[in-house]
Length: 176
Image 1 (cartoon, one colour):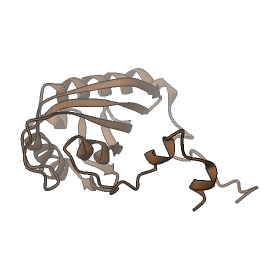
Image 2 (image 1 turned 180 degrees about the vertical axis):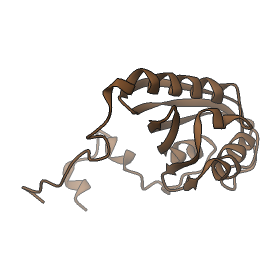
Image 3 (image 1 turned 135 degrees about the vertical axis):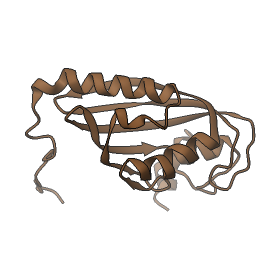
């Protein structure tokens, strides 16, 4: 609503800027650990009680064991030869963010799609909070519709808004 001014950025308002270098070290080590396909000792980077909060299709994982059993292991089983490539990272006190992609081979069941052997790009955004040298919160957006599209599944049934990218469409057509 016009004129609405709800409180903004409350979670990061009181960040300790002196923690920026520590946060950066934790995130960089964690990404290296993911690229080394570490699972058993991923607790080196994540607190036991951390929260992993994903978009629809990813779900929320509460605690390290839940994350390992219900995200990391199934994801690793669906996609092999996976490498994480952060295209940009930002650090601010106890906070960090990144966006990028993973490149992987689809070699296991993924959201009902049997292995195709196709190389896929898995786009993502991550936002982390680091406390006491470990990630305690992780907000995640994984572009599953893009992944599924690469596997031949159109989750939008040709009704995605990409159709509005067509220069031949007019604004009048969009109003219908």
